Length: 226
Image (tube, rainbow, N blue to C red):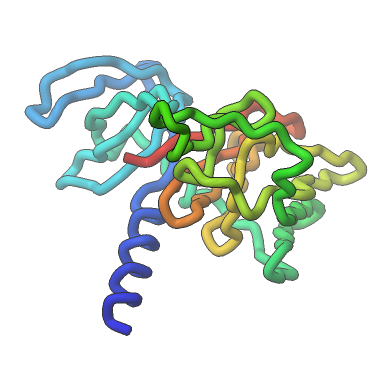
């Protein structure tokens, strides 16, 4: 039992270790530094970053978010953490659906079983005998949420009701949704909605952020938190 609990805690820690943030500076940019606090790069204001632990006054971050993240340090005064915006209320929730509400805005997210037979699975062959295979792409796109295995779950409905308008958010190639680590936030200053999630099958963890500005879908950012 102790071993099982230890593995579970390690998995959860890997999932919730960081959070998304936004660069904000009156000069329009900030300096990115290495561990010795030497300048190695700059980032413009409004850039999305992924923040890890706070070391004294410095966030360790990933930026230029992709599977080849760049890393560095930025002063905490130059970062607005998305989790500090107003939280949407979590309404109805089941094993396969969750609803968030705030005033006249409603967000509905569902998930459903992944049907491997109705999708094109592309494997990377490991050896000449084809005895070990690694799932590389599904329907020609990279896979998020598994570590080379076939996904069990995928997103179903992902929509936002804004007054009389409904937005459908993109969820292609995102697998193993985790509603326990899904949250929605509202930035009144910029009239922006942020929906963040940390998803995983236990090994293929990733973080994803959807951004809606002034009632229009702007961007989806997907990253592996290192």
